[in-house]
Each structure stands twice: as structure tokens, then as C-alpha cells.
Image (cartoon, rainbow, N blue to C red; front, top):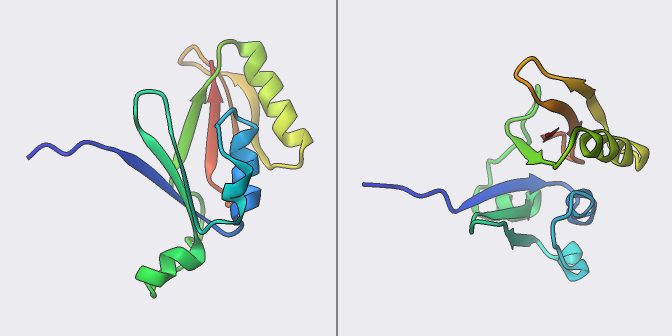
Length: 127
């Protein structure tokens, strides 16, 4: 058996707030998706990224509970330059999103920063 990853799903409290965050990272998400219980977009290469509201998840998994104690997944977005990492971090934190770790030059040779999406998931920015 060979499994192929096709979709990464994110459970969200507020669909519109979450999608707004990801639009700031350049994802193409229509405004009409803000009011839906499920939204998704295809990423370059064919992988899909999807969002489901907590209510949607509880509709098929009634015992689902919001994780506590930290994020459970991190998404990493590659930018073209160190300056773009700094600018993206500044833009997102300037819009009120939580900056977890300001941009730094990582020992592995990348410019790196970490912000949290509205649901507390780590979103890495690197070049």
C-alpha cells in the first residue's frame, strides 16, 4: 500500500478570521468561503489545504475537543528573501496576529520567524 498525502485540514473557531489570516499569506480564498462550514484551496503541486469549523468536526466526531497545551501542527511558508520574511512578520503582527518568534537568522542557514494563526497554530515563515 502506498498512501499519498492529499489534504491538510485545520479546525477553526471562526472561519472568516482564519481565512483572512491565510489570505495575508497569499492564498486564494474567495470571500464567500467566510460563511461556510468548510473551505479549501489547492496549493501549487496539487496538495489541498482545508478549513473546517469546530461545529463541522463535532457533527461527525461529537467527542472532539479543542487541543490544549500548544499547537499540534505547524505550516511553513517559504518566501523569496530574508527581507520578505521580515516584512511578512511585520505585516501580520501589525494586523494583530500573535508573533511567537520574531525573525532571526537560524543556525541552519535560513531567515525564520513564527506567527500564530487565529487558532494558535504555528505558521513558520522562512527564506
